[in-house]
Image: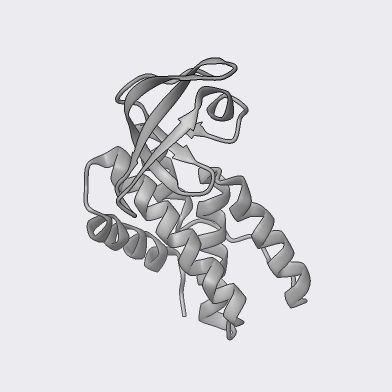
Length: 164
């Protein structure tokens, strides 16, 4: 997949950002093209080789229509998580590693539901925090809102679905 300056993307390890430039660098094996990506959540600037960006690990950020769909998924019906903490954490860890927004929103929704009914393990709580941070950062990027404002939207959507 090829990206252009201004495209909003999600890096597999650093989360959502915007392509601010494309650079060409001459190396021993020829000229290489790099995407320059600004990651606002962490203040990082990444230089990602075009080949690494095109291998499917980096993806376009969600669209505006997906933003609204995410908000509608949050209060929706939860998927039952395994009671066995090892199975649960394996499943949730795998969902988070995909960096796909549908997986992130399910992790946030399902762990929030579980938190209301049972104590979360430290790993579960870390996964919930990580999922919320990634989801809020991507939603803030595509909507132009602050992470704090998007976090309030996420809280409101979750509150509509989680009944104590």
